Image 1: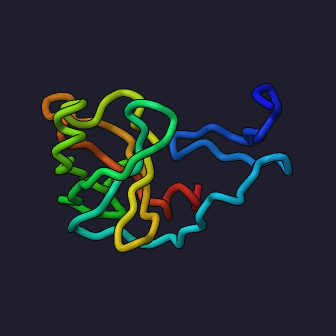
Image 2: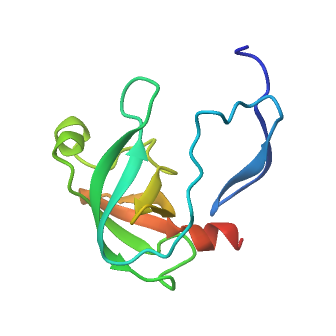
Length: 131
């Protein structure tokens, strides 16, 4: 049902929104993913540009440091031609899009470079979970 509660938000912080799924949320078609440490190299983001389903888009991690700041651990460059043609890069609403590398969740998009929307920052999943 559309108005049925699926989750409860416990806290909304600069490192993410945290909460608990209700027992009503169907996880049948969801895939669990391991967490990992990011490194320089190819990765993917999952984001929804149109419609209701997220798609996978290629990116490159051009800098990976867990000590940059609490929310800016990775510098991401969008390399996916379809995403670049459609949006020009990272746009408003992509914050929180998961970053996956080597089949592991390593973080999420946080910021875009104003002077270069093909690049932006990502937060490490470990920083998200440790806050």
